[in-house]
Every structure is written in structure tokens, then in C-alpha cells.
Image (cartoon, rainbow, N blue to C red; front, top):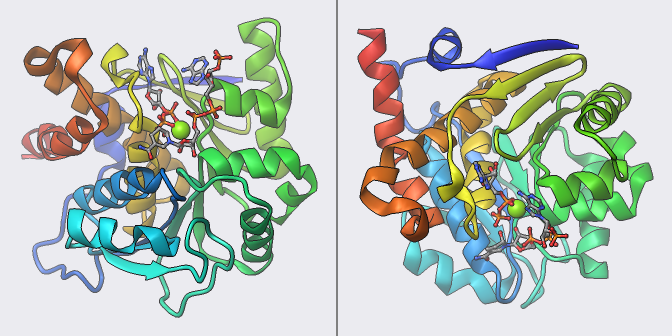
Length: 284
Ligand SMILES: NC(=O)C1=CN([C@@H]2O[C@H](COP(=O)(O)OP(=O)(O)OC[C@H]3O[C@@H](n4cnc5c(N)ncnc54)[C@H](OP(=O)(O)O)[C@@H]3O)[C@@H](O)[C@H]2O)[C@@H](O)CC1
Ligand SMILES: Nc1ncnc2c1ncn2[C@@H]1O[C@H](COP(=O)(O)OP(=O)(O)O)[C@@H](O)[C@H]1O
Ligand SMILES: [Mg+2]
């Protein structure tokens, strides 16, 4: 195992400042496939976070019932709807995004599982899988072999347990996750306090974040942020590392104003700009 601590210096080596002559057409298009009846908020949070992390265009693919909710709450985001009202049942689209984030609030209806399976069989676009995308994979482990090399998985501890089974010690958790990453050639964002990013034998430990992040939707936001960085053509490992670092930093920046209790997932999104600015100041 190779252990690397991720601090500002490590981020600055990977960070690419925005080109003066860029435009939205080359700044990356992220597609967020998320949401189900009662959990359209997860799609909103993820899509908004993707935009605020710098990609040029964001499209949300959601069940029909979420159409007005997403259009009204984030007018900058484009929306494609599934044929089903309450859940995703057929993932087809004509756009060509640079990266896709799938799973937040998606639910695990049989129709959604089948749609996800179909999607994995044909998808060739860089991918981040979270929440119900992970839960569906846990129920259908043979589908893991459909994932392209360096697909990013972002499990919280329970989702990780569903994927790799129980562990007794931290050491066992790391060795099982490393083995899983190697077996399927995946990047595992092992969310926690702190979050570790596992790429085969290399374990990156994040240095930002605090308990304010223990709030509904903070993982949904992280998925949008990493997907956005992937869409901006960061390598998968850099997108995962920078996304986790900036996500944590928003909570460190906001804490003096919000305290632990009143910080909510939208405060992560609100502070992404300030988190980026700490990098800009240091590149001048
Ligand atoms: N506004 C919206 O639309 C929102 C939508 N959301 C969407 O809801 C869906 C369900 O997601 P979910 O994560 O709430 O459910 P689930 O996978 O059963 O995990 C819960 C269990 O896992 C554990 N656990 C979790 N974290 C842990 C930790 N750090 N450390 C230790 N254990 C931890 C803990 O287990 P316990 O300790 O109780 O055994 C807990 O009870 C998903 O699609 C998501 O995107 C949400 O994002 C909310 C906002
Ligand atoms: N006590 C904590 N300290 C630091 N980070 C935390 C803490 N609790 C949760 N987080 C972070 O918040 C996020 C929670 O993600 P997740 O459980 O998927 O939330 P949700 O599904 O509600 O969006 C992860 O990035 C995790 O690392
Ligand atoms: Mg989650």
C-alpha cells in the first residue's frame, strides 16, 4: 500500500486554471442521471453542484415528475425526462456528454435496475456511480465487470459494505477495498471522516472537511462535483481527489458562519467558488 496525504500542495499540482479563451462548448458537458418520486432534490443538488464546479453545460436526466422541479429550481440546467413518471426506466439520450454521474436518489425499482443494466452494457462515457447506482450493483455483482477502467465509485460506509461485505478492523476495510479496486480496475472514493480515495494499491487521504458535512444530500453534491471535473477532462483520479478536497474545503470555509448544526448541502454548493479561489490565489 502506498499512502499519500492530499493537501493544498498536492491539489495545486493537479489543478488546471481556466483558460482565458475557453467557452461553454469546450468547458465540458456533464450529464446527471438521478432522482425518483420524493428524491428529485438529489438530482437538483447534484446538477447544481456540477455547474458550480465549472463545467460548461449540465443536463439532468430524471423521471417525468421532476421536470418542473428541476427547471424551476435551477434554470441553468437542461432537463431530459424518462418516459416513466416516478422512476427512471429507460436511459436513452441523444446528447454526447463528456462525463456522467448516476445514482443519487435514483431508487432501486426493478425497471430502474433493468435500465441501469442496459445503460452499463453500452456506455463508453466517463462515469461516476453513487448511491442507488451502487446499491443496484451490490444486488447484481456480475454487472461490475461491465464497468470501464477507472470508473469512479463513491460509497459511504454502508454502501461500501453492501459492495465488499463486512469488515472487522480498519485494516481489513482497506485491504478489501484495495482488492476490490484492483479486481475491477475502479477508483473507490471511500467516504468518511476523513475520505480516502483508493486506486489499486495507492490510498490518498483527504485533509479537508468536518462534521458539518454529516447532512442530507452532501454526498449527492460530491457526485455532481466529481462528474463536473471529469467532464472538464481531468483524469479520473484527479477528478476524484480534487472533488473530495474542494467538497471538504467548503465546509471548513462555511463553518465559522453556519456552525456544525445549520450547515446544509446547499451550503456546500454556495461555497464552491470560495474553495476554488483558495487555489487561484496560490497560483498567482
Ligand atoms: N434530498 C434528497 O433527495 C436526498 C436523497 N438521498 C438519496 O436517498 C437514497 C438513500 O440514501 P441513504 O444514504 O440515506 O441510505 P442508505 O444507503 O440506506 O444509507 C443509510 C445508512 O448507511 C449508514 N451510513 C451512512 N453514512 C454513514 C457514515 N458516514 N458512517 C457510518 N454509517 C453510515 C447508516 O447505517 P447504520 O449506521 O444506521 O447501520 C445509515 O442508516 C440515496 O439514493 C441518496 O442519494 C439522500 O442523499 C438524502 C437527500
Ligand atoms: N463527520 C464527518 N466528517 C467529515 N465528512 C463527513 C462527515 N460525515 C459525512 N461526511 C461527508 O459527507 C458526505 C456524505 O455522503 P452521503 O452519506 O452519500 O450523503 P447523502 O447520501 O445524504 O448525499 C461524504 O462526502 C462524507 O465524507
Ligand atoms: Mg449518498
